[in-house]
Length: 106
Image 1 (tube, rainbow, N blue to C red):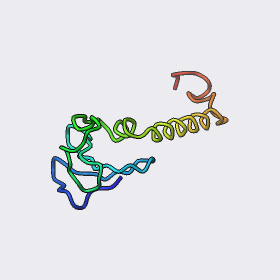
Image 2: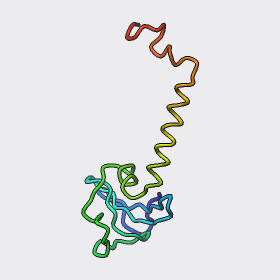
Image 3: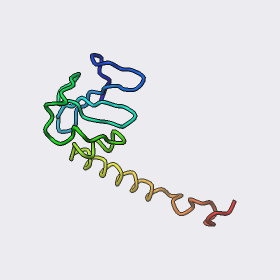
Image 4: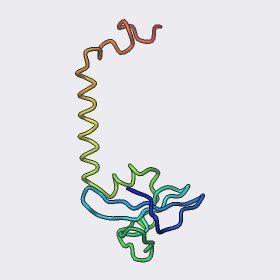
């Protein structure tokens, strides 16, 4: 994901070029309303040509957008989360998270 160098970038909007893990390309408008797909090509606004139902959708975060458009992102995120949780579980100090095995005491 990178900023468009062709489309305008102002105080209230910017445009990002995005390639998913599946190698699909998008141009995404970022405003205070969220992230919205405006084209399936970099540096382009083709709002009238988008027919996948995304044109009226704004997403709160890049993660929410990717969850909707990239099944491989969802899988990769889940695998990464499981790996990190497993790492935490294997730490020797995992049982002593709160200190001296007393929850909430200082």
